[in-house]
Length: 306
Length: 308
Image (cartoon, rainbow over the protein chains, first blue to last red):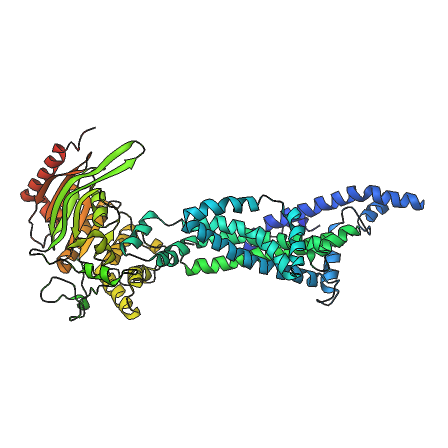
């Protein structure tokens, strides 16, 4: 394996290369995880493969047994290369709008995620504004907001889908609503904190200039809340992806990563499940990366100390 | 280092107010939002024979705290004429900051009456008649220096070109030309405080309220800013109310020193201090200076400020 390359005498200049210095620790962890994964795959699939050999009454060697654990059709735990192979096949093997293409399913989930994220962010900010605006609203809204997050979404999602289906809402919107329902919470909590973040002195200053409440909001409270907004958005964007996937589970699920997961578990297609998981992990990192990028751009605009 | 004035900052002959463009007065009363016509009429200052910038009579303020009542101000009366530089000195808890906050309408007195520029404190605040400088610069970290200066002007609805003009003018006044595009964290503490003074002056209020503005700065920067502030006062003809802990600072800057004492917050002594308007730090070694400083110290002692 390539990890041995790290210990080879490859010269000081290369070892001190900034790229290598930056990524070597991460690479080491990833390689270690892959190694552990292979060992676990062998151990977990051993009984399955041995049973297969014995049923067919063919003699087998240890190396055949181990090779078998890594190429089983429906393993308990697929080996990493099997997952990667299935992933690459289902991403590049079909046109992006084919029902067997992971790109197609990712796209379906991504659109629900983005719409849910947008709705959730707007709802989260609106609730925070109301809570900061009035103590009555704070007292009446906050308990409900917290309660809403205590109900397990897995139990709630089918109810949502059925009820919304009954009033004629199907497809993208119900999924987005569930996704928004899950993801508004961190934004609300963050923005309540953010809107109340300004220094008393800054608030007094606005008062000495007899600024209107709207000016205080736009020129002081809103900019003060921006760091809190991005902290909330980062949490929310992953939650909204989870929400979209969960929302796809009870729909009978024709499309979306959730549908792939569900179909995979129906038919024991573990490799399909894992490649859908890989796709959702890649989507999540991509979304967080985008929010981080936006955050850095805004921070630069706002002159944040580097 | 003396304060440098650019040509555009030259004063009109009266020397009373800073009027950069000659004819038009800098202060245009901007209608505060939400004020109706009848309230507007009340905004007009009441004509008085000798103009008082601040007229405080029998003002008391009691805070309700968990440990009971605290008399922050007890029956305080004080008249401050236009153009004076008045320092408030006293130990912590003597109510000098509260005094300033009451004048600024950031806090309301429990009893007594208070006139600022001949109108109530609230009317004066709504009419943007004073600029306030806090202990800390309290700049908005996401705004550049120029935009920080423009903030009160934006709020008060000045035109874009007027905002630009004024930002440049008042940055020059505090010797910070060239720092327009910097963010606050890129400036030293003393520079930041100068920006906050320029910001308080930017809408040209007749009254400047300063609450220990140099308290957090080191001695050298403080001396330097004291000299600059004095020149600023001399050139702009503002009335300045200045809260401080420091006896030399109070004596050096003021035309009048108000000595206060705690529990309950009250005025012990009011000392006139008539050094020439043009003065340098050297006067701090003169016998007159030391005599006044001594009187302040005696006043503070009489108010039991050195107890505990």
